[in-house]
Image (cartoon, rainbow, N blue to C red; front, side, top):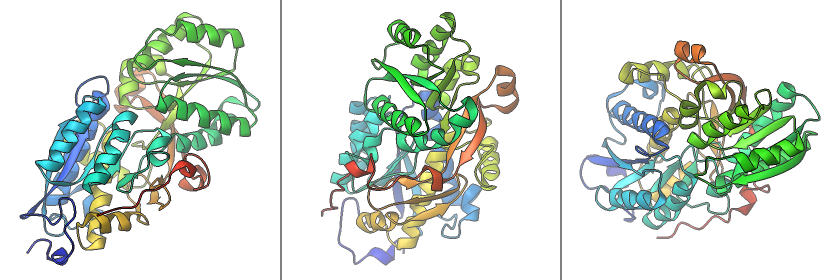
Length: 413
């Protein structure tokens, strides 16, 4: 009988599971400005469900996973389109919890969506695999007892960039920051300032731009008045693309530009305009362990294109959650969350592990650089791998921000 190991456990949330299938949810942007990465996330999710049920891909390498379901349950995947909007996202998530009785969900790009999902996960005792979203609040002020972020935080990216930027651009550089004026941009602004100044760089100014605004004239005027060596440009999507184009129009083609987090929904609209722009990613097909090749091959065979970090993160989230369930011997959400708090794994992205204080994964970061169109045509990806920074160099202590801002709520019945 499926799941008999947990038959005597106290009911909690959607546990115990009724029947022989267990529900996993994907809640991500399949429309709107974030859809380029959201569609990759969905593909990674669907591939993970297939491999968990039928074997293949990385499942064949992981001892805790059988390729015949999880704890003898067949995994059923459910999908919601958040449209990148937190109100839509909470509606689709609550529907999957209530109607589809999911035990786990992942997906999402927008930081506001992820933050809005944290209390819903806690109230309904559903494990939340937070991916991609960068703001510190997810494992800081808004940390939650059922939310586990395997993706980089803004602090993780800043730690990696502080290791590499002085080598790339030189010591004693002056830098200016243009940033989106909400949690994501503010997190990156603060961590980049602190860590780059620790490396001997000098911040000469900042200029905020509202989320959704694409006219950067005011911010570029502020930049021009300071004449910095480097611009740290915390932006994304069409806003990043338009900002880079406007910088070039104003004669800043040779200015070194850093965008802390780079991915498909930013690189696709920017294209060759982002050539030479440096940032970080959660994974790159040319990096990680030997398993990266196995994942890339399986993904390309299924979908016909090269996967980026968005696909990998969701795929990995489904697999390591499932391995934690198998290790625990039950889907009981409180027990699985306790298992995850000390869970360590090494799949394609490298050595990773959660910590109890904030549920942030200690993990590698991939410093990447935008490429020209010819390289993109050859590789299928707009980013080249510059350097992989191990988790031992990107980790920050539980006594440092944003972790120090996390007062982890208790898991209550």
